[in-house]
Amino acid sequence: MIPFKTPLIGVKRLSHTYLAGTDLSVDSLKNIDLEVFRGETVGIIGPAGSGKSTLLQHLNGLLRPQRGDVWVKDISILHSGEEIRTVRTHVGLLFQNPENQLFEQFAGDDVAFGPRNMGLSTEEVRRRVKNAMEMVGLPFSYKDRLTAHLSLGEKRRLALAGVLAMDPEVLVLDEPTASLDPDGRRRLLHILSGWKSSGTKAMVIASHNMDDIVETSDRVYVLLRGKIALAGTTRQVFSGVDFLLHNDLAVPVASELMHYLRKRGFPVSSEVLTDREAAQEVRGLYDA
Amino acid sequence: MQRTRSEPLIRTTGLHHIYREGTSYALDGIDLEIEAGEYIAVVGANGSGKSTLLMHLNALLLPTSGDVMIAGMNTKNNQWLREIRSMVGMVFQSPDTQIIATIVEEDVAFGPENIGVPEQELRHRVVQALRAVGLYKLRKRPSHLLSAGQKQLLAIASALAMHPRCLVLDEATSMLDPASRRSFLETLAHLHRQGMTIVCSTHNMDEAALAQRIIVLSKGKVIADGNPNAIFSRRELLVLANIEPPSSLRLAEKIGEYLYGFYSSALTITGLADEVDAYLRNKGSYDQ
Figure 1 (cartoon, rainbow over the protein chains, first blue to last red):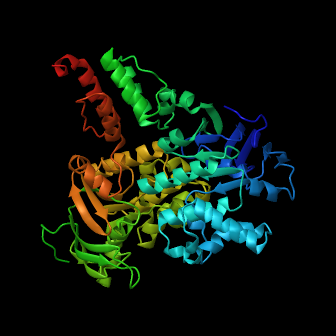
Figure 2: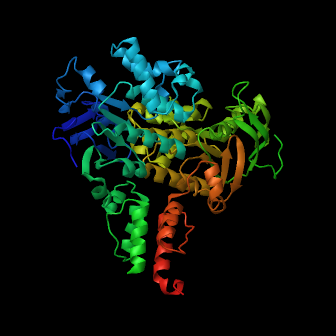
Figure 3: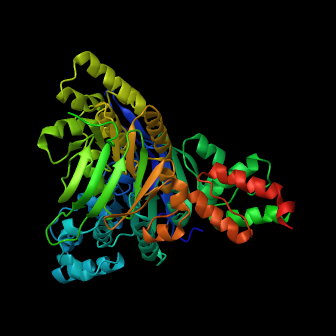
């Protein structure tokens, strides 16, 4: 399901080395090819240190390509000068634990920071702040609250509002649900799917929570030691349970249960992703 | 210091905590006893008081009213502060805030060096702590170049190097990938077998299920305290506390919807596979 042919983001043979030229150099990314199209959500999974965060930081030009290139629409990040500002508007990046990066005293100012920097009029900034806060389920009156007094879930949604207020076309999220409680997590995923529902936006999500990936992602890239080891639809990728477990990655519990049942000789499908599908498979075994 | 044999390692009596006057109690009357050698998970929604409670366990916070006794030493008594802090090691949620030194092994050495551990012993402790978390190979790496998961492992190593009697971990695994999480939990289990007391907070109920005892907090109060099977069999309690059952119970419940009479209280996916296997092989006897 690829609605448009030209990707919003195209990563071409991207490599990155930290501390290049020293004896401590670390090859963080090796020859990465990746595309993000309009309307889709791309999941990125991989163990700690596999290069996920490094990759994400390239998607809006926070890191410049050392080798290879990243295209955001028709802008090459490698060759961009002033256009890098446009790239950062197109691609909104939400870091891990973004609540640690809120810096304004009042909540509204934090959301307004990006739009103000874009040189928008006061009215437009206000309109965008209001919109963005509504999108993440924070009443506009919260703009006058002290940032420090918000709860963890509220702070994270506030940080998301700050990114959404830039009206990006692609949202890049690094572990968006980590350390949220079940309510907070459901709420955040709901906001994200609402934001994306127009069909013209795209999302990239890196997460260790395979339930997050199953719920959100159309396609998945698996990063191992800086390389893309596996890519495909979410269903295809998680059908490789042996491969993923062998490489220290988690799989959705439904896939894992099917894996163990297969090992015990039960003929169950390898393309099970959700609890419901797993229950149906077990029911099928019972009826057979 | 005199203390009787029956004194628990940690005792809180009537513990209340208020962050700012006029706001509600973050902790609202906590009475707990934790024996040396226990493995305890503290669970509850964001804002339920988990972190506040844990910070009382090594005198990072002092009671607004009530008492916290560590091996008979009252945290309010300044003369015990040093001893309490070495006895109870803390690992926090966000590793960046507790990494001090620029090189991995120097960070681990910082604590013990500060309390005057002699050089030979210091070297031994650093190696031992780094091996325990699997970071020994990265000991010369600049700490800011570690991934989030690796930084968290480093924080654990730095706590271990102090040779504490009790490890208190505040959502220490929330940013770890599945593999690091697994090896971290194995490390915890290993330390526990050697007699270490472990108190950890988590949103991950698969992880909480590994503890011997689970304490459920809601709005600053203990609303349940018991072994994992007892806690997770009380659905109404989980809803009340905004926590989700372990994934194996969630999946078992879904299977039960499709397979009348199927029930499993297994807290692991392999355990659930055993139950499904047994159910299917005995299906004749269920049909009666």
